[in-house]
Length: 267
Image 1 (cartoon, rainbow, N blue to C red):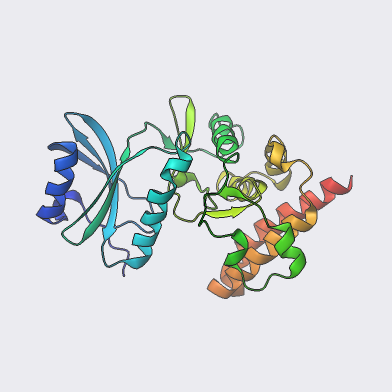
Image 2 (image 1 turned 180 degrees about the vertical axis):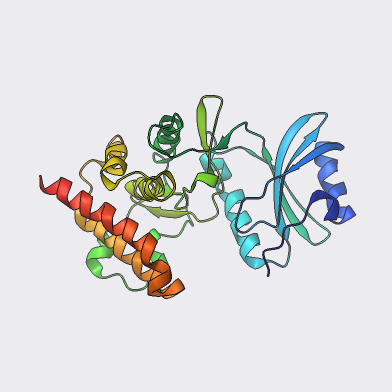
């Protein structure tokens, strides 16, 4: 299905009516352009306050799967992610309504005042055990050897997509949103993925990203072989998806982080 966004007025009347049965009349709408799988996303203002709503057509299986994960996991991530208020399925659409939290997408640049809040929410999220049914991280790759399977095993609930659009910072705290790609694995994996985002989006050096990672208890003593297993799996996956040329930049970022970690561990 093409990545076509619709606005509030373009949703079927039956969908808007079903939402307003939960929220009351909508007075104002501010569209949210971010999110890979959703086809509608907006902050709705009503007499009772604001609510963030996202949704997909009922026939869009990838989007429906992503939203079903968000529904299933919301009780497990209360406190680090906004509370799910309701799910509406009407007139060929599937919509989720979340507690509105004030904030902007995290600034991951060196020296950003958002970095402590990002670290705090990742620390809080990293202490949560994956609920039953969440797939192991290792299920994502079919080419791992036995050693890699052991190195990447764990029971922590992982987000796995900590890009700045999924990290909100406001009112002195952070939020980790959009739990559409969960996995069970070692807690340090989300720290590694976020360190990569610091390099990709915030222009940190590998050494700066590693310094940031070292504040997390779960990062202490991360086996370089384990980080190498994660780097190798993601590198091969990217190459298979977009080819050597298309994957070169992102794979180079991870390779430089791995190299810096190996050197630091050897000292």
